[in-house]
Length: 436
Ligand code: UGA
Image (cartoon, rainbow, N blue to C red; front, side):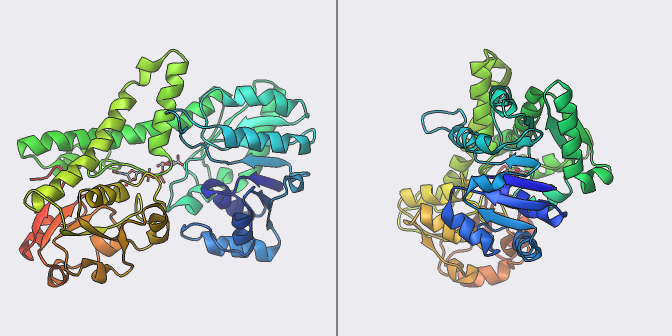
């Protein structure tokens, strides 16, 4: 099928490449010249396993092209819109500027029978607002939220755990759902659940899923706060409750909390939208989820201060990690980088290392010292702080070797990802989060 993908950021670039990979003829469109130039060369503008290979294969086969000229979307059977919906500068709500601009630009190029599939995460009610303009051209709007995780984006796009399509409640909706079934044929044929809903449900599924995940993380971090005043161990607690299949162990990793381009802004936008709808109290707990999450960053900073005897001023602090999570070079609302910046603000000499995210982190925070080599970064540290659980730190860094590099063997494990007893046995003073 001929497809267009409007917006070639994280979501769009991966979607375009993955759709070409499964055999569609795809044109990716973005307003950013430099991004289109990079993608047209077959380079990935972001670190995502398998993306570069898939871009190169798609371009070589002629199945995948990129352009800044949206008129080239003309003739595609399905137009996916995957532009960003960041947090507004003046509040918690989502900024829909890019969504509205993308629809304004696309609509003149639509033909009767086309399907427009919104993929951006939007406040509930957005599809209903945009639908009349789309249907005035004879095309049909559906909302098809995306559940990919950074670091697993290619796999999640090709083999998702579910597909959700919100459609209008008339015959055009049924037809459009069939078109989307055809687009996702390989996954549908493998039995991937394909749920057809109305617009509002599809929009809400997306934010509800992220709200649930954020709540799960903040729940365990709230338990960490209680563990801290009682001497309990939150990681053992998580293991124990996680054995209950109704609860499950995943997303019960206590530490410095969640960040990234999705969870934080999505729960805020959800709370803001609920208030607009007169149902603010229904998700008021999301404010608490956000507050617990942000307190964990303070807690990590306090642990470092305490570990250094009360002040970080002019102390050498080595921060292992800058990305908001491993397997990603994304530093948007990264708790890791936030902790590093706060320590620098308190007068510490902060050295940050990360296997992938240094270039992005340095652009945002040039006041920090960045060192690509892990061992070089560790040399002379008065305290080491682990804030992103990359394998390079969690699995591959031997405590004896690390001890030979630092000035003082003191470590704060902001992700509870290290074997505390192994580090203690190697002479380190180990501080976890919510662990004695
Ligand atoms: C999240 C969702 O997991 C995806 O399903 C969704 O599609 C995506 O947002 C989106 O809306 O686009 P992502 O932002 O890639 O995906 O990251 P997650 O894997 O959810 O991790 C989010 C944050 O939570 C990270 O900072 C991670 O370190 C933190 N986290 C995760 C914890 O602190 N503890 C855990 O147990 C798990």
